Image (cartoon, rainbow, N blue to C red; front, top):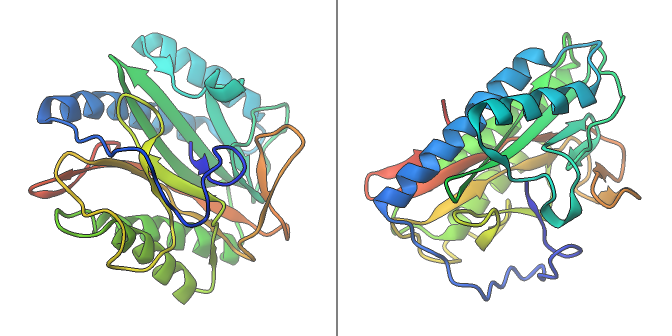
Length: 267
Protein backbone atom coordinates (compact mmCIF):
# COMPACT_ATOMS: atom_id res chain seq x y z
CA UNK A 1 0.00 0.00 0.00
CA UNK A 2 1.61 3.19 -1.23
CA UNK A 3 1.74 6.68 0.22
CA UNK A 4 -0.41 9.43 -1.24
CA UNK A 5 2.18 12.10 -0.65
CA UNK A 6 0.17 15.26 -0.99
CA UNK A 7 -3.38 14.57 0.08
CA UNK A 8 -3.19 11.87 2.72
CA UNK A 9 0.05 12.47 4.59
CA UNK A 10 0.77 16.11 3.92
CA UNK A 11 4.24 15.68 2.41
CA UNK A 12 5.31 18.02 -0.37
CA UNK A 13 6.32 17.14 -3.90
CA UNK A 14 9.80 18.29 -2.87
CA UNK A 15 10.22 14.83 -1.31
CA UNK A 16 11.57 16.27 1.96
CA UNK A 17 11.45 13.73 4.77
CA UNK A 18 11.82 14.71 8.41
CA UNK A 19 11.77 11.23 9.92
CA UNK A 20 14.91 9.19 10.47
CA UNK A 21 15.45 6.12 8.32
CA UNK A 22 15.53 3.12 10.64
CA UNK A 23 18.26 0.56 9.92
CA UNK A 24 17.26 -3.07 10.52
CA UNK A 25 19.54 -5.68 12.04
CA UNK A 26 20.06 -9.04 10.30
CA UNK A 27 17.67 -10.58 12.84
CA UNK A 28 15.01 -7.99 12.03
CA UNK A 29 15.48 -8.55 8.31
CA UNK A 30 14.99 -12.28 8.89
CA UNK A 31 11.70 -11.51 10.64
CA UNK A 32 10.68 -9.26 7.78
CA UNK A 33 11.49 -12.04 5.35
CA UNK A 34 9.00 -14.21 7.24
CA UNK A 35 6.19 -11.65 6.97
CA UNK A 36 6.95 -10.89 3.33
CA UNK A 37 7.06 -14.56 2.42
CA UNK A 38 3.52 -14.85 3.80
CA UNK A 39 2.51 -11.94 1.56
CA UNK A 40 4.06 -13.65 -1.47
CA UNK A 41 2.30 -16.92 -0.70
CA UNK A 42 -1.09 -15.26 -0.32
CA UNK A 43 -0.63 -13.24 -3.51
CA UNK A 44 0.08 -16.51 -5.35
CA UNK A 45 -3.17 -17.98 -4.00
CA UNK A 46 -5.18 -14.90 -4.97
CA UNK A 47 -3.57 -14.83 -8.42
CA UNK A 48 -4.67 -18.40 -9.08
CA UNK A 49 -8.23 -17.60 -8.00
CA UNK A 50 -8.59 -14.38 -10.02
CA UNK A 51 -10.32 -15.15 -13.32
CA UNK A 52 -13.21 -13.87 -15.44
CA UNK A 53 -16.52 -14.41 -13.67
CA UNK A 54 -15.15 -13.90 -10.15
CA UNK A 55 -16.31 -10.93 -8.08
CA UNK A 56 -13.51 -9.01 -6.39
CA UNK A 57 -15.20 -9.42 -2.99
CA UNK A 58 -14.54 -13.16 -3.32
CA UNK A 59 -10.82 -12.40 -3.48
CA UNK A 60 -11.17 -10.45 -0.22
CA UNK A 61 -12.85 -13.45 1.43
CA UNK A 62 -10.09 -15.72 0.17
CA UNK A 63 -7.43 -13.34 1.52
CA UNK A 64 -9.13 -13.29 4.91
CA UNK A 65 -9.16 -17.09 5.00
CA UNK A 66 -5.47 -17.28 4.09
CA UNK A 67 -4.55 -14.75 6.77
CA UNK A 68 -6.49 -16.73 9.37
CA UNK A 69 -4.90 -19.99 8.28
CA UNK A 70 -1.42 -18.50 8.67
CA UNK A 71 -2.31 -16.72 11.93
CA UNK A 72 -1.14 -13.31 10.75
CA UNK A 73 -2.83 -9.93 10.75
CA UNK A 74 -3.79 -7.83 7.75
CA UNK A 75 -1.67 -4.69 7.51
CA UNK A 76 -4.37 -2.90 5.52
CA UNK A 77 -7.68 -3.59 7.26
CA UNK A 78 -8.35 -0.72 9.63
CA UNK A 79 -5.28 1.24 8.48
CA UNK A 80 -6.43 4.88 8.40
CA UNK A 81 -9.95 3.51 8.10
CA UNK A 82 -9.41 1.24 5.10
CA UNK A 83 -12.07 -1.50 5.50
CA UNK A 84 -10.53 -4.46 3.64
CA UNK A 85 -7.55 -6.83 3.76
CA UNK A 86 -6.69 -6.51 0.08
CA UNK A 87 -6.58 -3.77 -2.54
CA UNK A 88 -7.94 -4.89 -5.92
CA UNK A 89 -7.56 -2.30 -8.66
CA UNK A 90 -9.03 -3.00 -12.10
CA UNK A 91 -8.02 -1.41 -15.42
CA UNK A 92 -7.97 2.39 -14.91
CA UNK A 93 -7.84 2.00 -11.12
CA UNK A 94 -4.29 2.84 -10.08
CA UNK A 95 -4.18 1.71 -6.44
CA UNK A 96 -6.36 1.16 -3.35
CA UNK A 97 -9.32 -0.27 -5.24
CA UNK A 98 -11.87 -1.72 -2.84
CA UNK A 99 -13.30 -5.24 -3.13
CA UNK A 100 -16.94 -5.22 -4.27
CA UNK A 101 -19.53 -7.19 -6.21
CA UNK A 102 -17.81 -6.13 -9.43
CA UNK A 103 -17.33 -9.22 -11.59
CA UNK A 104 -14.03 -9.53 -13.44
CA UNK A 105 -14.28 -10.03 -17.20
CA UNK A 106 -12.05 -11.24 -20.02
CA UNK A 107 -9.56 -8.54 -20.97
CA UNK A 108 -9.36 -6.87 -17.57
CA UNK A 109 -6.03 -6.26 -15.88
CA UNK A 110 -6.08 -6.66 -12.10
CA UNK A 111 -3.66 -5.23 -9.57
CA UNK A 112 -3.48 -7.10 -6.25
CA UNK A 113 -1.84 -5.39 -3.26
CA UNK A 114 -1.51 -7.21 0.09
CA UNK A 115 0.21 -6.40 3.38
CA UNK A 116 0.57 -8.39 6.60
CA UNK A 117 1.96 -7.92 10.08
CA UNK A 118 3.69 -10.93 11.60
CA UNK A 119 5.54 -10.91 14.94
CA UNK A 120 5.71 -7.12 14.91
CA UNK A 121 7.11 -6.69 11.39
CA UNK A 122 5.38 -5.80 8.15
CA UNK A 123 5.39 -7.21 4.64
CA UNK A 124 3.97 -5.52 1.53
CA UNK A 125 3.86 -6.49 -2.15
CA UNK A 126 1.75 -6.11 -5.28
CA UNK A 127 1.36 -7.54 -8.76
CA UNK A 128 -0.73 -6.84 -11.87
CA UNK A 129 -2.13 -9.80 -13.78
CA UNK A 130 -4.01 -10.26 -17.05
CA UNK A 131 -7.43 -11.90 -17.06
CA UNK A 132 -7.64 -14.01 -20.16
CA UNK A 133 -6.72 -12.41 -23.46
CA UNK A 134 -5.83 -8.74 -23.02
CA UNK A 135 -4.96 -5.95 -25.43
CA UNK A 136 -1.45 -5.49 -26.76
CA UNK A 137 -1.21 -2.15 -24.94
CA UNK A 138 -2.24 -3.74 -21.65
CA UNK A 139 0.27 -6.54 -22.07
CA UNK A 140 3.08 -4.10 -22.82
CA UNK A 141 2.08 -1.92 -19.86
CA UNK A 142 2.31 -4.87 -17.48
CA UNK A 143 5.68 -5.94 -18.90
CA UNK A 144 7.17 -2.44 -18.71
CA UNK A 145 5.95 -1.90 -15.14
CA UNK A 146 7.36 -5.20 -13.92
CA UNK A 147 10.67 -4.57 -15.69
CA UNK A 148 10.81 -1.06 -14.20
CA UNK A 149 10.61 -2.63 -10.74
CA UNK A 150 13.48 -4.96 -11.63
CA UNK A 151 15.55 -2.01 -12.89
CA UNK A 152 14.87 -0.18 -9.62
CA UNK A 153 15.90 -3.17 -7.50
CA UNK A 154 19.18 -3.34 -9.41
CA UNK A 155 20.06 0.05 -7.86
CA UNK A 156 19.61 -1.16 -4.26
CA UNK A 157 23.31 -1.25 -3.36
CA UNK A 158 25.22 0.24 -0.45
CA UNK A 159 26.62 3.62 -1.50
CA UNK A 160 24.02 4.40 -4.15
CA UNK A 161 21.52 7.21 -3.65
CA UNK A 162 17.79 6.86 -3.06
CA UNK A 163 16.86 8.68 -6.24
CA UNK A 164 19.00 6.28 -8.28
CA UNK A 165 16.15 3.84 -7.57
CA UNK A 166 13.58 6.46 -8.56
CA UNK A 167 15.31 7.41 -11.81
CA UNK A 168 15.68 3.78 -12.84
CA UNK A 169 11.89 3.52 -12.87
CA UNK A 170 11.21 6.86 -14.51
CA UNK A 171 13.77 6.58 -17.28
CA UNK A 172 12.72 3.08 -18.36
CA UNK A 173 9.00 3.85 -18.23
CA UNK A 174 9.25 7.09 -20.17
CA UNK A 175 11.55 5.52 -22.77
CA UNK A 176 8.69 3.11 -23.42
CA UNK A 177 6.06 5.82 -23.83
CA UNK A 178 4.23 5.41 -20.53
CA UNK A 179 3.98 7.75 -17.54
CA UNK A 180 4.89 7.48 -13.87
CA UNK A 181 2.27 8.31 -11.25
CA UNK A 182 3.71 11.13 -9.16
CA UNK A 183 1.03 11.55 -6.49
CA UNK A 184 1.94 8.21 -4.91
CA UNK A 185 5.30 6.90 -3.73
CA UNK A 186 6.84 3.79 -2.23
CA UNK A 187 8.12 3.85 1.32
CA UNK A 188 10.31 2.50 4.02
CA UNK A 189 8.87 -0.42 5.96
CA UNK A 190 9.64 -2.37 9.14
CA UNK A 191 7.88 -2.18 12.48
CA UNK A 192 5.45 0.17 10.77
CA UNK A 193 3.78 -0.28 7.41
CA UNK A 194 4.93 3.15 6.30
CA UNK A 195 8.31 4.42 7.47
CA UNK A 196 10.84 6.90 6.16
CA UNK A 197 11.94 7.44 3.49
CA UNK A 198 9.46 8.12 0.73
CA UNK A 199 10.55 6.24 -2.40
CA UNK A 200 9.24 8.11 -5.47
CA UNK A 201 9.23 6.60 -8.94
CA UNK A 202 10.80 9.70 -10.44
CA UNK A 203 13.80 11.81 -9.52
CA UNK A 204 17.29 13.00 -10.31
CA UNK A 205 19.97 10.29 -10.02
CA UNK A 206 22.74 10.94 -7.53
CA UNK A 207 20.43 12.63 -5.05
CA UNK A 208 18.60 11.52 -1.93
CA UNK A 209 19.76 9.55 1.08
CA UNK A 210 22.90 7.42 0.75
CA UNK A 211 21.88 3.75 0.86
CA UNK A 212 23.14 1.82 3.88
CA UNK A 213 22.93 -1.83 4.88
CA UNK A 214 19.79 -2.37 6.95
CA UNK A 215 17.53 -0.01 5.03
CA UNK A 216 14.34 -1.69 3.80
CA UNK A 217 12.10 -0.23 1.10
CA UNK A 218 8.75 -1.08 -0.42
CA UNK A 219 9.50 -0.15 -4.03
CA UNK A 220 6.34 0.10 -6.13
CA UNK A 221 6.11 1.52 -9.63
CA UNK A 222 2.59 2.68 -10.51
CA UNK A 223 2.52 3.27 -14.25
CA UNK A 224 -0.18 4.67 -16.54
CA UNK A 225 -0.64 4.01 -20.23
CA UNK A 226 -1.75 7.63 -20.65
CA UNK A 227 -1.07 10.71 -18.54
CA UNK A 228 0.30 10.65 -15.01
CA UNK A 229 -2.58 12.50 -13.33
CA UNK A 230 -4.88 10.63 -10.94
CA UNK A 231 -8.20 11.29 -9.22
CA UNK A 232 -9.28 9.81 -5.87
CA UNK A 233 -12.92 8.73 -5.94
CA UNK A 234 -15.58 9.68 -3.40
CA UNK A 235 -14.83 6.57 -1.30
CA UNK A 236 -11.63 8.37 -0.27
CA UNK A 237 -9.39 5.51 -1.37
CA UNK A 238 -9.78 4.31 -4.94
CA UNK A 239 -7.39 6.20 -7.21
CA UNK A 240 -8.08 6.19 -10.95
CA UNK A 241 -6.28 7.65 -13.94
CA UNK A 242 -7.70 11.07 -14.77
CA UNK A 243 -7.82 10.30 -18.49
CA UNK A 244 -9.30 6.80 -18.07
CA UNK A 245 -6.18 5.05 -19.34
CA UNK A 246 -4.99 1.70 -18.00
CA UNK A 247 -2.67 1.49 -14.99
CA UNK A 248 -0.36 -1.23 -13.66
CA UNK A 249 1.31 -1.70 -10.26
CA UNK A 250 4.11 -3.96 -9.05
CA UNK A 251 5.75 -3.91 -5.62
CA UNK A 252 8.46 -5.75 -3.72
CA UNK A 253 9.86 -5.19 -0.25
CA UNK A 254 13.65 -5.04 -0.63
CA UNK A 255 16.43 -4.88 1.96
CA UNK A 256 19.78 -3.19 1.38
CA UNK A 257 22.59 -5.58 2.35
CA UNK A 258 26.36 -5.60 1.98
CA UNK A 259 25.89 -8.22 -0.74
CA UNK A 260 23.28 -6.24 -2.67
CA UNK A 261 19.49 -6.22 -2.83
CA UNK A 262 17.57 -8.89 -0.90
CA UNK A 263 14.01 -9.23 -2.22
CA UNK A 264 12.09 -10.18 0.91
CA UNK A 265 8.72 -10.60 -0.84
CA UNK A 266 9.86 -13.03 -3.52
CA UNK A 267 8.83 -16.68 -3.35
